[in-house]
Amino acid sequence: MSLSEIIARMHAAEERAGRARGSTRLIAVSKMQPPGRVEAVLEQGHRLFGENRVQEAAAKWPAWQERYGGVELHLLGPLQTNKARQAFGLFDAIHSLDRPKLAKTLARLAQETGRCPKLFVQVNTGEEPQKAGVIPAEADDFIAECRTLDLPVAGLMCIPPLGEEPAPHFALLAKIAARNGLKELSMGMSADFETAIALGASHVRVGSAIFGARG
Ligand SMILES: *Cc1c(COP(=O)(O)O)cnc(C)c1O
Figure 1 (tube, helix red, strand yellow):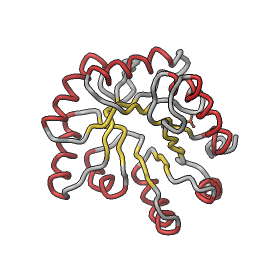
Figure 2 (cartoon, rainbow, N blue to C red):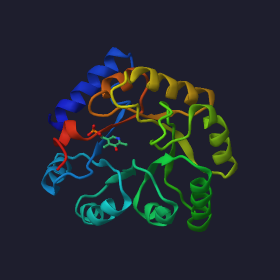
Figure 3 (cartoon, rainbow, N blue to C red):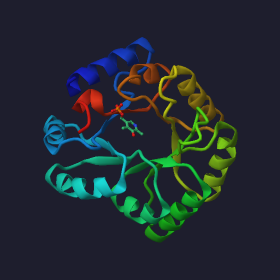
């Protein structure tokens, strides 16, 4: 599907949900895509991209950021504390804040540098043992802890379990955000971004539907 088709589907979903046109931001997920496909989307004027791994992003994006102005880059995948400093320099937002040790490391870097990427707390809404994220029952306490550290938590992120109906997971994430006074919701991927928009997503993360299957 083309970028413009995805954007048209987003607008239609916003309209059906009674939301303002353009109120959902599209993160084009460029992980593991051939460079030509990413450049084609940059050439079309899109400037918001997501990557899963610090190392891969560090190898690809500085050159593109120089060539195309105004690129905004978000980290979507798990962040090891020993890569936090590098991530700080590279990303405008981190969607995978999910444990106290990482929160403390980010707080220290924020103090040291006087800035901090926008942060999303990842919630493991399906309570899957192999998946990153705080479990729903611990989300309120963890968000409070992040606030004590003065971290700029803007919202929540989730990845529903594969093969499950995503809507209840999106609704749960929205509920946790609302009771914690958080406005932004990073939810919805290629297969379910319209459902996520209906349930209040502020950011959808779409990869294969824009770029094709990953190599
Ligand atoms: C890969 C990935 C996406 C995009 O997935 P698609 O199914 O290709 O749209 C979104 N979010 C995260 C966290 C990812 O790792």
